[in-house]
Image (tube, rainbow, N blue to C red):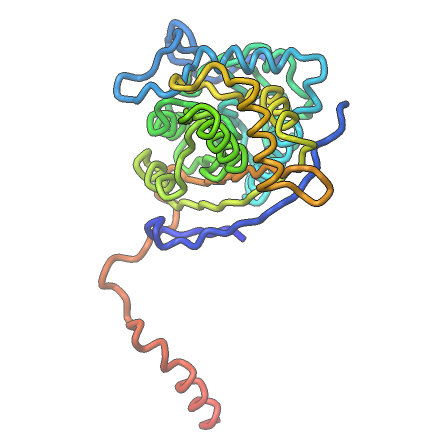
Length: 355
């Protein structure tokens, strides 16, 4: 179920769809007719951020983490979560009854959305990512693609270029999310659509609580080990501020079972999702880590000995304005008041009797 409305986000009822998994076992097209902005590089300089943003994340470290993950020989065994979310975004694209001659994936990773799309829906697909190894080791896909090394915060494209922009599990690492959304809105054509997904605030709450309890008990205090996430209450406001309308927001949860806390942390590293906040603690003592694993198993463990990890996903859809789009009626133009709606059944029953 998805909710589509032009009302403020506070009036939306958000749906949750829990999904449970087990950790899986170990196991170039010319860019024609696309305008690029004249920039020195599509990737930001080391540690850079836009002047108005809070510099929360070390973007250079995040680039290194994603590059390291993308060149691992067994990288495919860590793709399960991003492939699943990519397929759900592709489902939302297919729900829109139109084709998209030119599309853009912001923070594409190894192409987790493009592999689920076909040529009948998307004509050409531009993929941008901060990590060059992710682009070099992209998954196989049917549609023609163009890879562009670019930072999500500094898109090197001209205005009104793309019919569709997508982003999957990437925007939670940007320092200036409002700016990133504004740039996405800028590169969209009028009546173009943006479909995105990012981690929500309840993501990895089991790991966060276990580490905090263990570190407080062993070291007398704790530091953040799971990066901060955007609150769903803010998401609609950010989209509206960026210029999007006819907003759709929904949320679901994917729960994956792991043999233990250390296997979970290994998978997060393999996904390129290790913490890169500037205020992170570089080292945890061995005793603290062992205590956290014990707390995790004691508080959240399953009967079979495995431990769950929850990934909360926010999905968002926003459209760029065009005159052809449906608009709400002017205030005061209604011909029937809400108070009269309760009388509809009485009027219908009277009409049947008169017949």
